[in-house]
Amino acid sequence: MYDKTVRRRRAVLGLLVVLSLLLLTAYFGEAPSGRLHAVQRDFLAVVSPIQDGANKALKPVRDLFGWFGATLSAKGQRDKLRTELDKLRPELVAAEAEKRTYQQLISLYHLERLGLSDYHPVTATVVGKSPNFWYSVVTIDKGTPAGVRVNDPVVNGEGLVGRVVAVESDGAQVDLITDSSMGVSARIGTSSATGLVVPKVGEPNDLLLRYLPANTTPAKGELVVTSGTVEPPYNSLYPPGVVIGQVTSVNEESAYTSVNVRPAADLHNLDVVDVLTSGAEGRAARLSTLTSNLPAGQGSGGQSEQLASTGTGG
Amino acid sequence: MSQNPSPALLARVAALSIAIVFFQIGVVSEVPVFGVNADLTPLLVVFVGLLGGSMMGAAAGFAVGLLVDLALLQTLGLTSLVFTLIGYWAGRLRELRDPRAALTPLLVGAAASAAALVGYSLMKFLLGVDAPVSFELLRQIFAGTLVNSIVAVPMFSLVRRALASALPEDPRRRRRRRAYTTGGLSPLSKA
Image (cartoon, rainbow over all chains, first blue to last red):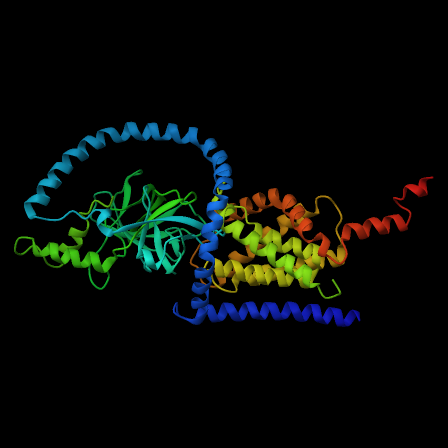
C-alpha cells in the first residue's frame, strides 16, 4: 500500500514536470502565430472582460493601498520637482525662442507638424499587470474594434510606455519598455546621434541607451527621446520625439558610449494609457508626402530620418 | 495525502486559484511595496501543498502556473514547472515533518517565494535572457521574498479557511487529538 502511494506520488510529479517541459519546449520553438500562442490569445479574449470588470470593482481597494505609498513619497517628490522647476525655467525661455524659429521653418517649407494627436490615440485603461520582474507586461481594455493592432506604440502623459504585442476583441497585451524583449531607437535631447534603448533585466527602474557614437557627450538629466527613424525597411515603430526618460549616468565603452536612463513614465502606477493606432507605415507614407514639399535636392536619403525627428512627440 | 482528493476539495482549490490569480493580476501587481510587488500565487500553491499534501500541491502548482502564463502571455510551462516543484516540496514537508509552529506559514511562505524567484531567474538564464547577475537583481529577489513573507500569514489563514471543511483531515485537529490521547495536554490528566 505504501509503495503504491509512493509510486503514484512520484508518477504525478514526473508527469507534471514532463508536461511543463513539453509545453516550454513547444512554446519556445514555435512562431508567434503558432498553436500555443493562439491558445494564449484566445484565453486573453475570454478573460479580458472578466479582468476589466474585476479591475473596476477592485479599483477602490487598489486606490486605498496606492494612497499610502503615494503619500509617503509625495514629500520627497515635491522637493525634487521644485529643484527641477528652478532648473528648467531658463531652459523654457530658450525653448520658446527655438519654437518660434521652428514654426517659421515649418511655414517656410510648408511642412505639417507631426503631433501625437495625428497618430489617432486610443485611450485605454490598464486592467492587469504581471507580478514577475522578468516580465513587464500589462493588459489594457481596448482591442481590435478600437483600431488597436500589434506593434502599436503605447504612451501616457509622462512618456513612452511600451508597445502592443497581442490584440483581441476585448483587450490587448502591452510589453512595457522595461521588458526584456524591447528595443527602441532613440537619441539624446537635441543631438542627432542615435542609439538603442534596451532594458536592464532585473533592474525594473532602469534602461540602457547603447551604441551611441564614442564622441557623444551626454549630460546627466538630459532627456532621451524616440528617434522615430524612417528608413525602409527599418522603420521605427515609434513616433519621433516621445520622451523615454532622463540620463542618470554615462558608461564609457571602447567603441560606443552607453548611458543609463530612468524611464519618464511611472511604470509601476499605470492607470490610463494612449495607444497610437496609426502605425509606422502610416507615418512613412506621411513623411514621403512631406518630402515632396521640400525644395529640390533636399528630399532624399537620410533627409527623411531628419524629418521624422521634427515631430513634437507630445 | 494518501487518498484521492474529494471533488469538493478540487472545486474549492480551483475556485480559490482563479480568484487569487485574478486578484493578483488586477490589484496586487499594481501596488508596489519597497519597489516590488507581492506575489500571492506561489504562496497559494505552497499553502495548498502544506494543507493538502504533495500530490495536491504539485497539481495546484501546475494549474496555477498555467493560468498565470496563459493570462499574462508569458512563456508557457515556465511558471508551471517552478510552481509544480514548490507545491510538491510543501506537500512533502507536511507529510514528513507535519510542522506545527505558529511561524510555519511565514517561514514556508518565505522559502517558497525565494525558491520561486530564484528558480524563475535560473530558468530565464537557461532560456537565454541576456542579463547580468546584478546587485539589483539580488535586491529584487530579497525584497520580493520579504514582502511575500509579510503577507504569508494572512494568506495561509485565507487558504486554510477556504479549504478547511473540504480537507479530509486538518493537521491541527489531528495534532490536538493526538496530544489529548497521549495525555500530554489533556486537562483531565492534570486532575
